[in-house]
Length: 376
Image (cartoon, rainbow, N blue to C red; front, side, top):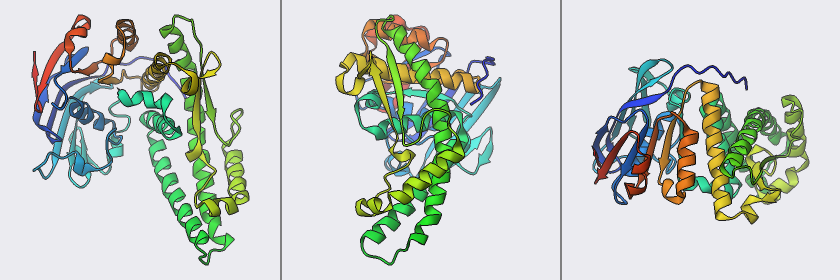
């Protein structure tokens, strides 16, 4: 990935409206260019508001894949509108949610929500962020896949094709395991396509992970005042040095053919980037197994800060920062450090009790009550 370091402009949202979205009947607000605190009791719609902003990244909701769950009860559709300044000009986007997503960017209808990727850079911190460190490999792959998609829109399409091809191969494996009439020749086209797509995914992942492991290590050192060292390791079937896409595709094809009988018995493809993982080490000890809650939280925080840094360097835009119910999990020192590291980016913070955060307030505070938002 070619990173340019010329800073063009600061991105910020000027107006947002969510109509018929979850419990938001018609929530509209004009945020400050710096910090925006959104507070209220549980169940009032704070996370729904953050979710409605996040959807403009072009990624799926961080809570569901079903549009029906996003539409307010009793409504046939949801309508989201946002106005923002990015890439040196005023822009707008609209999302209409029915059984599918309809997208308009600057008044022009687009054929797929993926067209939003790269148009509205944003980074999300949520309670689930800690799962990157604590939970299984799937959470870490999801983190990497979303992060790469935000800076390389082509990646999402390749990943989608890979997942579909993987599903077709797994269906063939199940058919073979059930005693169906399946020959080796029937596997070859799926193996070849899966290997080719898998190698492309690996190329993107190697390039991105090489950047994030360096940036995350630097962030972690800053959080711990240099007392601890974070190391990030990429675990995959392919060698991690001197990566070559053609060699990776050939290696994966060979592995698929060699392990085909095992795959038939397991009825699942055991080789490929869908099995990759990230490992995190603090002072050479596995953070997932041996790390304290504080160390794991600092590790996850370092990774998300690195994601924001990389997104800014590649897009030449300051991404919007969405902090959903995470500040209460941090002590005062980490809160101040986080906001300091976020710099001049526009930040949206949700919380139940704003008293601890108002001392950090530089922008606006909004209260949410039953899906309505009002500036305080």
